Length: 546
Image 1 (tube, rainbow, N blue to C red):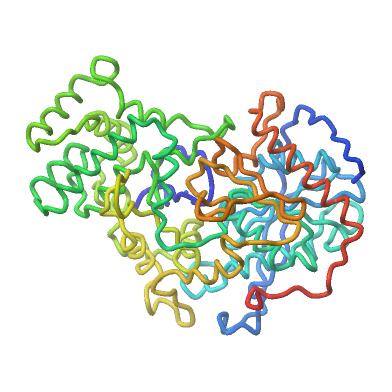
Image 2 (cartoon, rainbow, N blue to C red):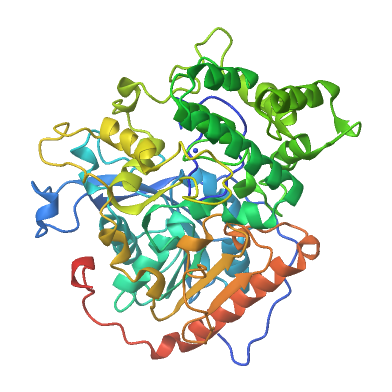
């Protein structure tokens, strides 16, 4: 199957290619000097327990074994007595986060507070796999509570070669940062281990709320993208769904052929493929609305290019052949198909070339998802890890809106994603472990969901983020008011954890990003001022005791 896992909870620059799934008071602020790009960092490992919960029946049979969990650190700015800033790796390799030590938020905080920055690679990602393969039994230890227990264990036992002194928590203030999935893990870590080990944290675009269907993913596109673009897509999809519900095989096949996708047998695979420029569900090969970013290395114009194709005006960028196609479809159906020619041309020119020449478009190597054998592959792979978490705990299946305008076809429903769960982790594939019929969202939401609260935990989100409604500032949440005890910040016009990025020329950063960074500096300053009075308890609570 295609291509890039959305690494949903993450804004990545996704080059199109066919791969498997993608202290002092008053505070005195140091000027943020032009940032120097740092070197590549050597990988260190800690012997991390595979099972932190030997008394929890969920993990029977228990193991006392450990695995090599990788971490990377930067002590460029560190001075004795400084804090440790822990960047939670999330759903990618540790190396993928190096920018954040070099010019991003961790570098900013390290420089400001003479701290040490460290990236901890999540279990089952990068090269931090506990087992030789990811069969259903071996994935049993990939849960939120095991992952956040790693963070606390690491803070208590980490060693930083070449750095003098013991920097372990709780004697040294450990301040976590995570974006997206890692933002949720940051919040969950503070909720669980903030009393005894982890001092503070910033959750950026943290997806703290789990729901099964998530059609709201497309709401920011409907609201903020060019209206002539979205209105044309809405209408084209409405017309396609009208054809689809008639079950007129000839008409459906003809419509698929306009995109060069007549070979796709499953209407849902077709609907997903023409949705790739928008994003999802779960997989897509091009940059989308989620990948829009102020930060040049991660920014992309792919979405704007797509919209220009769809919304161009005849005689002004909209090619004559496209207009002819629109008119032919209108004559045949009696409905308006404005923009269809540009839409089909974009799919043919940008999406279809991702499929290797001579390969069946309906195969797993291209745009087909219906090959069960493909999903049964137990090779250690980050995308399989991410899918497992989605199927077991977090959900968030991207679906069409149940009513009203929709940017994707209503062929895309919960069952489309759920079938992949059933094939990848089939009943009986594990001797001891099995996945629920649908994600057990209580495992995620028990930490607080949209009523989340923890001391010394800051939330920062972007109001144009496709994941916003799973975050602290969700439109479904109460109106948020920031306090020093519970700080929060919503970046106007902001996207998915945009605050995590920085550039060498600080003055060239957008004002709203500089303000977000300054807010984070002030927030951390207040925390560090209060650290001497903090009295950690001797033992933390387990997630099951929340």
